[in-house]
Length: 182
Image (cartoon, rainbow, N blue to C red; front, top):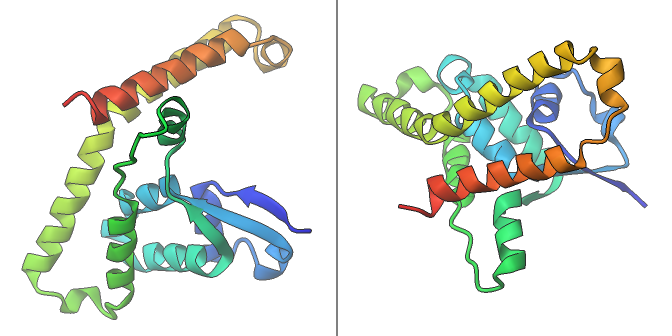
């Protein structure tokens, strides 16, 4: 029986770069997520290293058994509300990657198409910026707190169930504010 592994986006980049060889993942059931697709689609690499973006998407196509398109938050909402419908854009992003794969030479595209790509990139990254800024601030505060309380060794021995519950509630609250309170 194959082991199921839900992959972080960096795994797909490492496969694309050849840091992870096909022989190393043989017998593993790699699973991609909608978040992987969103992260690749909103990466600055889209503007700087389009070939790596294409290769990373190809690594998902070739080595993932499937893509979990629903975000963890959408899944949680569906548990509480069976009638909840997900409104993610993963299928359109996948369509965009499929189109991108057909482009041999990005420099041969008309400037208007490149401008549209940049505009789409800016729009997509703008959607997530407020949330990522909040998360980065929280992480920075957490690092300072860990250091002030004796460092990682002491920190790892503590029970953080309540903290995790608050953190997950924070994430869900921010997700709902940015996606459903419009």
